[in-house]
Length: 354
Length: 249
Image (cartoon, rainbow over all chains, first blue to last red; front, side, top):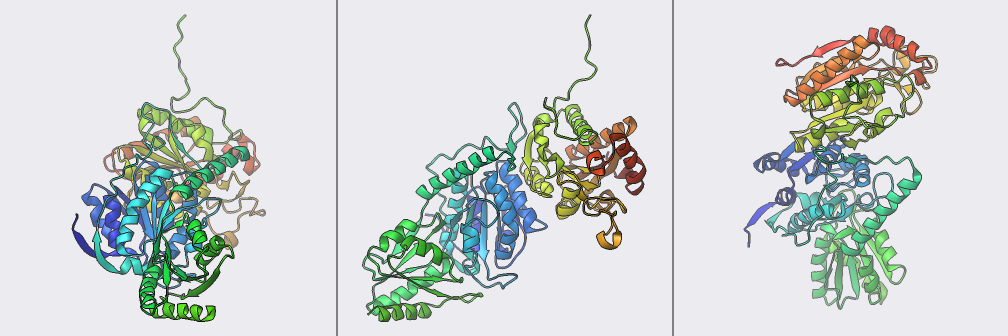
């Protein structure tokens, strides 16, 4: 067993990335995730890596493009407005099929918004974000420990599928300090060789990383191949946590920070004799549609709680497909729902159901 | 009788016909860059970053490991590659819209960091691929499809002198402007490109060669007229020469 270190979620993400073999970090300062870049600025040189503070998020994501294309494990991190700036590059990276990790510690928006936590980038993260048909694989930690674990997993998934992976946290996950244990995955599966990487065409045919296909016949084939690749990921990489759902009459659907708060509410509600559970998506893309769909066979009321105007809500409704009632509770603008608020919402649903 | 070859295709170039228009400067500039790579014997350790613009397909002509960048982002991609593989020779090849408009931030900061990459900057004072719109380097009075009565500074501002701007930066080690309008200028251009690559190989810092180039198609001129226009109009506003040379070079 490795020793536990007391650190902020942002630092945990950074150290986890280093331990996963990431040697290149490119980023631009933005609150509330600055600790990631600050940590990397001294930590990466220790392992012979490079930290570079870019002139913008636009440049940072293309530096990641360059480093990933050169065959290295590379990452960037930012928060909502900065992630918006990166969308162009993320589309190109997806099109060029380059593995990399992008961390978004979400803050409230739109616009400059504020620096308090939010989950309002769910659509942007899971549905594409930039132009064209593509998806990121999206992992949503709900604790500092999980932020570290999922960051390590993200690098393996990126290499496995040659696809960018986003770790989607929020300001709360990034700032909160917790004991963290670093547990390298000890990858059992063999990751594909990067024989497509640009390293100088020494004794081999030259490699090319491009995204322009002027012939629609060829581009359609590329689009379909990418979709097929993502279908594989959808089949293999769904991750979720079921918490006290076996006997539940009501199931709360929440991810990240909100899921953690919901657990406290569930504890209180169970003490009052109410059978409440939690279904927590860990992978937001691929989304655990089937888990929700199956649960809806027995559970008649779901409560989606989000720090957005209702984004994951749409995926939950899509999964449940009218089989059960889907209720919604949210706080936005940087406000975080309290467990008391969630408790009250559940009690209201129980009362109405009687 | 045994014949000695006195002229061959550069080993760095592929054997295909190009998509460039008759009279365009890209063909000459490609050839010069390829000759320099051949002479420095670095083909197998060179990576090129293609721009968006007329040269977007340059990887069809250069037998090199290649990235195709988004518009203006080539210096950032080159930075990422060079930081991973400092032993490689990494260069961008960019037009004026790519480098001096949408990618201004990327080129300025690559130069400011002293990034050990080389930029070949082809300035033909117009957007070629999109059909002849005003570029950041379009001359005052020059007619384009978005300045149909000629570029008026009150409305469209002034052309940017990239070399002079970048030469003010400490990180920039070699900065030069050349043209390819005559045999003499072509020889000068090749010398500058070679110096730029050598600057990178010696690890002295950022290097850029601006090549004034002709675009007969979008200038609505014959190739001969376009050569004259570069010499008389462009070179008057964009003087040829070296703006910065490394102390060791």
